[in-house]
Image (tube, rainbow, N blue to C red; front, side):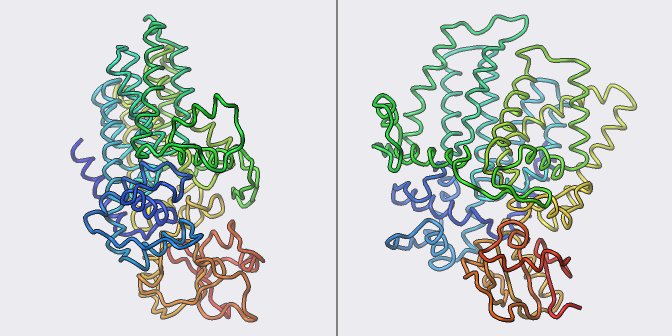
Length: 527
């Protein structure tokens, strides 16, 4: 166990060092530090504050300068000035990522413990090994965003709820409620656990009495009490009417007044986007839809999982079929949230990356690890286990050089072919400027034209460049002869997030001459 945790820690440390600033880190960390030092959660209220506060907390050791806000300034502009003008981003970024790294390690330990408790030592080691080399967890487990903290808290709440279901009691119920509210304070999508818990309560346990109506009612009451108290503490009890919400019945308004106003307003803004009230372009398999794709996250799982993980899922499914779990067994506590996370992400219009279904992966790991004791019981099973480990660990280690975020398996064309399937934060999240700088040094390229989709600063990596449309809000218009010399463009700008006027339309029909990390490289005149 310790060896696998050390390997995981090394992988995460490497990723922290080798990846540039991811797109959302700029606003999440900056607004989190503003909230931490001023008590004002008004910047970027769309996202609850807990994960933002965690990312900002280590920065207190540096006491970074906090620029004064300007009239009408949004959180993106403030974040840019916080990272790239008032402070040295080279010092801030690694520190801000420490909490996510620690929570990723904690998540791996939790999966090991839960799997071992349910199915023995070998299953626990299997779960830990799957987690330690899972590219999706590695990709989001080293950046200061909401994805990994929310995932960890979701799984922790599920584990605690399972323990409560085995021995219902007030103490355990209070802990379940508190951890769930912390999950809700990290990301709005964690609300999917509530119908999951309700369904698990309805199913009960085979050959055992359901929790009594009294104990179930007490659990529900603890949730009702914990939510305003814990959430209020996170927001420093900033209560009052939420801004920008429609008129509601008086009873609903009274209840909402018990909650922090920025949480209510942010939740309504987030769910209005997720519920298809606003158009949002989604790229899948070379096509763009403003209605989303129901198969988006299934395709993402198939394309961005290692071959070994896919094989482990098949083995886990076979083990389930071989011995079907009874209602209320631990497997139902893994299946129900996994399915609900997948369904909610698939029905949402916000489909800009597999990270919106990241909470599904730990439950899938637990289901897959269930097959390990079964595999060890026969010679053929042990061979299958060895092949699975090789096909999971090998591709994951190989992905480290190019970064875990743009990983695609061999069936999806690998990292250099993944853009044909998915873009956005599955591939191009602004993280690859360090690899572009390294490519320029190795190729002897002194200066480039750069279309960069991201919030990092190319200058901090020594990249001499001229901005093209889409870079840092650069104007959409192109000069008369726009492309000269070495032109480097983010895949998102060519394929999915097309700037006004679609200035890169001509490049879509032309394969890039080279790749610099995820970037497309074109030479003009063409070779």
